[in-house]
Image (cartoon, rainbow over all chains, first blue to last red):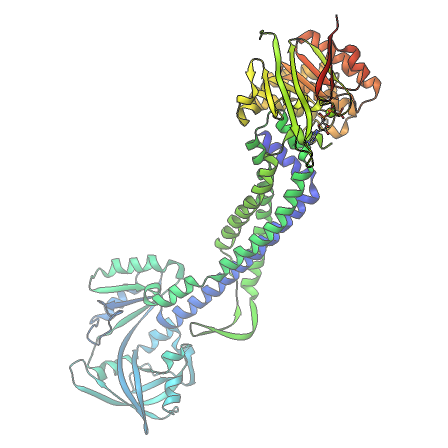
Length: 405
Length: 231
Ligand SMILES: Nc1ncnc2c1ncn2[C@@H]1O[C@H](COP(=O)(O)OP(=O)(O)OP(=O)(O)O)[C@@H](O)[C@H]1O
Ligand SMILES: [Mg+2]
């Protein structure tokens, strides 16, 4: 009680010192808050683009298709599966896909292709397929033996819009499958490696080619709030109620990407180091000075019976009170900065790529982490840095302290 | 030792390391101070007065020898025990810088009783009475920097005495005061000494202190040169 009273009053008595100490903490907190908010914002963007435009937020397959894809692991009733999924709360869109490998030839040139059978209308709704077309147009809504090639594949085959592509593959019944399709467009998904093999067909055309009438390998689900993806995955599992179906959120579908992202959250580390350095430098010096100046005061306190432990806490308390105040101010500044950066963003002089996705403008995010992590770090580093001066104060010998005058 | 022997020292020596050359500040001091004595420690500068007071109060440890306060051997106590013992048995008045500047007069005087967990009502009663006693009744809410040197010393006296310790130790309490103020404070302390039977031990160069003391101990080169009790 008395300790707190003395600590509070000292904070107001030594205004200059308090302001200096607080400034160090506020600057440290705010910078680190911006770093974390900004890096989280960038990661959220990357994840949003990676999922929404490509793998979706959730995927449904038959059995272990995800680990061991096979043309035979299909969902025969995907329309009704899709309807069920579509009725789950939080689901925004769903779209079925058929996959197989084959050989594609345009004129003299041939190469391996990945056949991707898509429901064009649903694919537009779910993954904005139309936005990926960089030349020509998308496949017609009704099956018309039309194909869209990935950018890299078109280049490898020297194919142009208007050319024809012959695809050879194997049907699910073991027959040789081959057919001729008209190239109506070129697509760029943002994933160069995938684009080197991607050959999109109307899902009905693909089913016919592969002898998979009415069946699909995958249903891709888009949810309205990506933060609720795990809850929605569970809800879908429950409403499908079929143990032979595998419902996987994007974190499972893109395991490696997810792990890389997590390992890569540099914002936290940089943010923490910034605070610790600024706080350490700013606080250590001022607290040490204040302890030295008040030697005789601590000497009197000790002489009249204050225990060393109480003096230790007196010093720590003063620093922590300033820290709490600084965190409040820093939280306001950091949130304001992140809010502005989430609206206006920061445009890089040069485009950069992450996970095959191109970025130029990065937006920050206002979130709890960008306040909690800096707050804990400020408290911890201020506390740690004050241990040494606090011990010094606690160990003052009153006999010597009083003699100093 | 008798019950009334509140301070007993036995063959106290103190050697300071100094700057390479050891300084023998005390060389075998044997003293017994009894309840109610108003004692002045005198002697030339450097004779060891402050050192002796610090050792008697447990603020500093002797190089050799023993100190008993109210029958308790100081060297047998841990740091925290010593803190508590000082809090409960010794009142300090230093030459200067006695008070905590951020606490009011009332809070400064109250401080030790807070450490002792005395109830709030009791604290207020005693602080008020004590401030009355030292003539600072209207000053409870002032801060030390707003007081004169003499007034600050009065607050220090009030703080030292308010919890009724057995012993009051004062290292040159009048050195920073004009003679008028010093005399007033001494008369006040002498009066309180008679009233309460607390032991007062002063180190001093001040003839006014010597006049009022009931016992005069003279130190020289770290030894007791003379020890006279006045009738
Ligand atoms: N911390 C210390 N380190 C080294 N020597 C010391 C220390 N404290 C005191 N001394 C020495 O011990 C001797 C006694 O000092 P002390 O302060 O006890 O004298 P004093 O009688 O109180 O003097 P004064 O009247 O000037 O206050 C002196 O020679 C002093 O220089
Ligand atoms: Mg002295």
